[in-house]
Amino acid sequence: MLGQLLFGGVTPLVVGWIVATTGDPTSPGIYLSGVVVVSLVSLVACRRLGVR
Image (cartoon, rainbow, N blue to C red):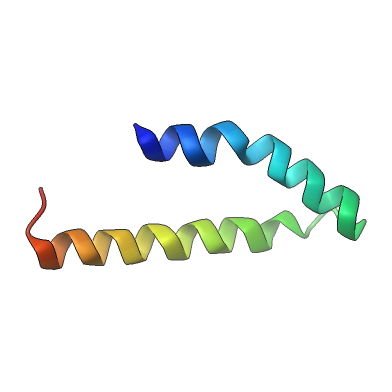
C-alpha cells in the first residue's frame, strides 16, 4: 500500500515535470524504468530476507 501511495500518487506530477523539463513526451519511460528497477531490487531483497 505504501508503494502505491509513493509511486502511484506522485507519478502524474513527476511525469508532467519530466515532460515539461525535457520537452520529450517519451522521456517518462526513464521514470518507468527506474520504478521497475526499484521494484525488482525490492523483490529480491524480500526474497533473501524471507519476507512473505
